[in-house]
Length: 401
Image (cartoon, rainbow, N blue to C red):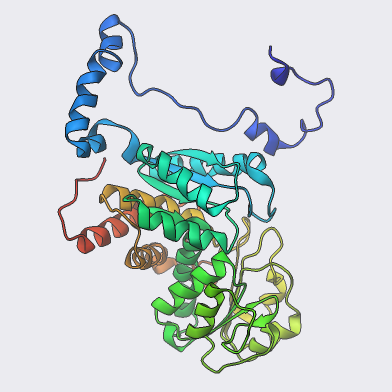
């Protein structure tokens, strides 16, 4: 055995089942064809493969049919914003990216390859992904810290003709919108009538704010660690200035806690904690989404004393806001439709599909499907693909199967 495979006399990880799941990694690459004869070898590799490569060289669109690329998503991270762990670097981020690849396979039937990068430079990240993109049908950006993540995604979307999505932004936003659509139904409200306070102006906070604006929620206040964003602040990044210019219709310049007084919705995407008095000051039949992991900003049991609907990001709690409800189906639908990008309309369609899966089972403790509900990815993929085909000015290939 190699030294890395040699068992230890005293293994400090032996009693933790999480380490057993990750032992040796969670992914392998397997051939879809067996090689049992010289004829198999000649068709799988040389000389037979040369005929296929020559055909693709003459007609590049044939790569969609005769390579794996359209079915494979690259899960790309630089390890700077991993889960609730922060900047832990690419090696430590790799188990998370492997896990994401497992979810793509399990829920959408797509292969995925984790790619962790030994750089945090925006130019280097963009150039690296552009160079490897011909091997993939989509790029899932993951756990890249703000504000760099905004520029990385925007530049890749401009340069690549395959779907690119930063899941920490848009996967979160899609599921939040789905949950809020159904929570609003529970309390008998329209989205446009809600006053929302978003705690956190990072990747997820900005993306959630944008999708809520697009869905018709007009009264939103967004807070960072220094208070509510407003146009009078001089410390705003370009992204935060955009948010300030499109939210906070009253021009409130106080704290997040102050903004919660009389608010209908609290959306926590920042960590930290919110005092009980602030939740108690919200409007009757309010909605609390406290999504920090592993410790929500608002204790769910406390929130339930004041809110009609409570959601968290934690497994084991009702109403788990989990990105796995969105990203597998979004990429599958986009790839099936031959889409070159994931548009805002496709994200809205995905959110509606997730919300609709709940159907007649809607109740205060069931506003989103279970993350294990196999209907979700199928519904999302169908909605995204239909949206993509409706938007495309050209015919697109049939689904991959």
